[in-house]
Picture 1 (cartoon, rainbow, N blue to C red):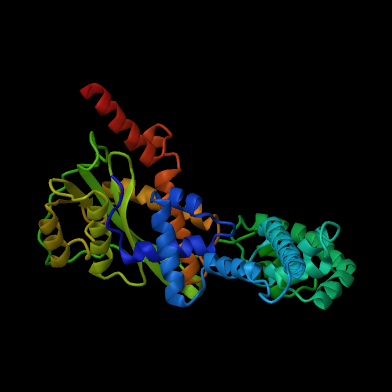
Picture 2: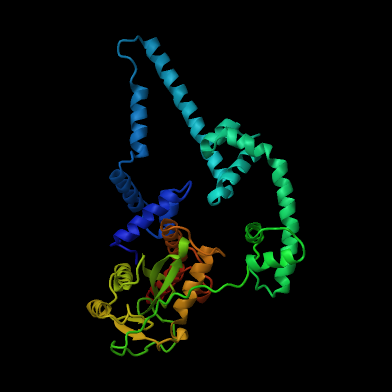
Length: 415
């Protein structure tokens, strides 16, 4: 069943996903989100109106009006000349926009972060200077032409540095291998200096990062499950059986942390249907208060048009054993189930889901960057997980497709 009562959080994330996706269309993004194209368009236009951004359609209307406004006092020949001049102007503008669109589409694969973004833009200009004017490329990519030519003039020096870095990387790998893969840049630098090589730690760290050479380091463990000794006992109704014969009968949920830059975190609470592993509810926040999990469960209730008669399984985190969460479950007609304290296997399916999410979104990175980037990335993955990602538990069908085939089979049997 489609989600009818969308939360403000879902709407804001949907608009942000559309606005931040280059070349996005309402149809494509709506398909990822599993919503109606017109609904997404309404949210985007409403958000733009709130921010005072003029819709493209309104601008096109004004342009068309100018095309039809020939000087009333002019004769027919003069009016035709004015219209022809205006048409030529619009065609030139359209060609300019088409060129900019083509440039940006080709440039998307070059984009990175920080200083690398600037260098990759220069590289893109250099690689495509035969297809487009350098001036136009620099304007579209928002780089200074003189800076590009300065970058171009330093090509030989950069090539020499890159060769030196590759040679240094070979030495670093030798030291790193001898340490059993445990040494980071400080110890590698010390080892290299012992051999007589003059090199500083900053360069070693940069080369190690560039060539994906990492040492063993301890990460600060973030506890998302904190049991409350005073909480009432809830039985384990799942007994590690995370399957269901029908959708809407058994749900499971958990909280995971999303690492940001500078050691900060956002937190994600999810609700999964055990039948198809579909994510029917979630919430992202910068805190771990009870509202994080209640918001996720309320979204699940809206997605399923109610949860009455179902069972919800979780760990013994303080949020799930809180009075507020218990009251919400009672209100929604949900029976609670909980695994043993500190036994991750009792909620293994959710643990596995969150591991897949981080693997698919971080892709080896240490963090998501800032909050906006994190929220947008995770939101996009969650929605596309439901509509497109093939799950081995579903016979390599997406959760939505698995549910659709189940409904079709039931209708066929009923007929």
